[in-house]
Image (tube, rainbow, N blue to C red; front, top):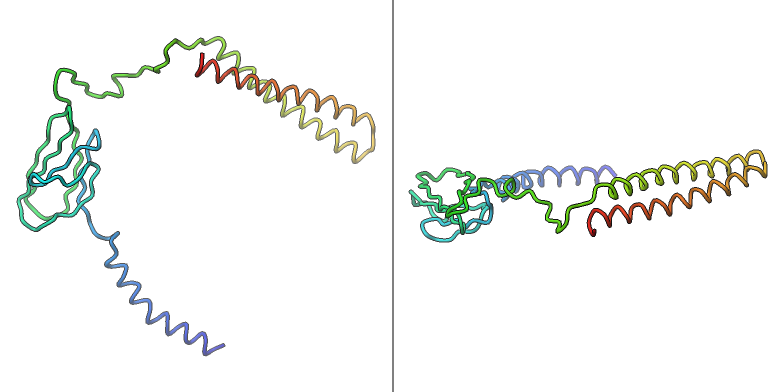
Length: 192
């Protein structure tokens, strides 16, 4: 037993420097350059050569500097920048639209729900109330039926079984009402 533990200890002592060295050269530790843009998927050119699309993590292909970066996206003004050093470069470009339709923020400019017809509020509210009320009722009556069964098991009173039967019936009706109310809610919200 002692021999085995000693072998494990010696193995761990010789293996740990190798593990630590492997972590030093791990690719996760390499510092990449980052170019991002809004909107994303813009083409990134380094010295007129397409490098990729934003967001782009990359390393310089050579050590010759300065380099010219260009970020291009259809319908937006091209951005250009000169990089003079080989250090880590990280920047996010906010591209400006070109042409007649200058939208500052396309998300804020088009806030429509894209439904063909306007939603009816009364049926949505009514079906929501039916769904919530029948869900609460189903939980309450099913819980009462469970209590009635426990009371019958403990005391042996046959009246508890009759109460359980009634509470189960009302609970089942409430579950059906819950499903119908939820179906109506989905209909009035999305299909009407």
